[in-house]
Image (tube, rainbow, N blue to C red; front, side):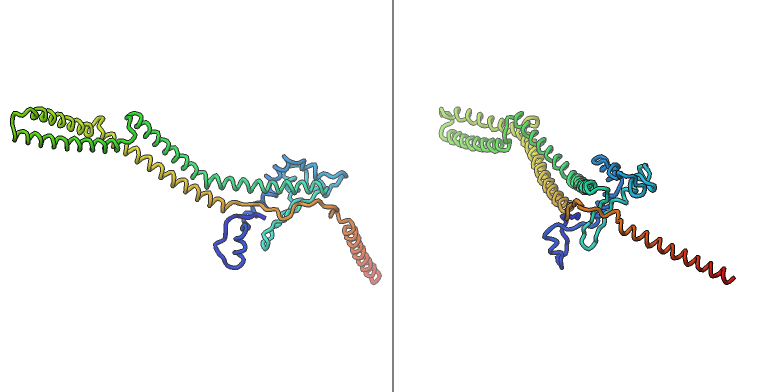
Length: 326
């Protein structure tokens, strides 16, 4: 029985019981059924078993054995002969396919049946691999590409930090702004002291010192502001570059998370469509032969000959009576 993990949509009737296990897949059962009697299956069997030799009889059998009067040694004729010895019948009501193999020994019939079941399982595995490759392969490639983007973004950010010797330029900008504010406050205090000194005495000894201090503070403030606004290697340019790199890394991380979620969904959907070949009954080794049916054959021939003799006798009697009347 070929089953699928796809769950039915309806919950009515027996479908609830079907949801407890795997749902049977009738269409895929026909695929396995056709494959077991196909030329590919014959080719695979011949690589595993001495297939032609298995259908040769010890005695000369020009009817049932191979080659025979009806089937010569050509490849196409052997394929037709194989189809007469192997049958796969599907029952719609139960969803079970029955494999029957005829051979001239019970051991050979069981070997062929076991090999055909293995080939059917191999076909199911190939179908599943194709499904996973088509459904999950693209999502996996997108995840790998997103991972490469994250790695590249992090590498660019690390290169920037090593080159500029800055971990986070925004923190440096905050510290610099605090320094400028502190210097500006000290400059304002110094200028207030200068104004107060001029009001008390224009020639006081502290006035030149305060004026030199104010000039130094003003120059330092201008220098710190220049560090921020410089176009080539200023802190503002570094902050812009740093923020761009951080933004690229965030975008790459978000894209990676989205692709990983898509991959998980693709795997879940693909798992629902996977097929499984379940053996309900294993091939058994017959303990007696069903062919040829000798007594039935003898009885059939006897009855046929008896009927022929009866017909011939009736014809003979009729001819004799016709001749006597003439």
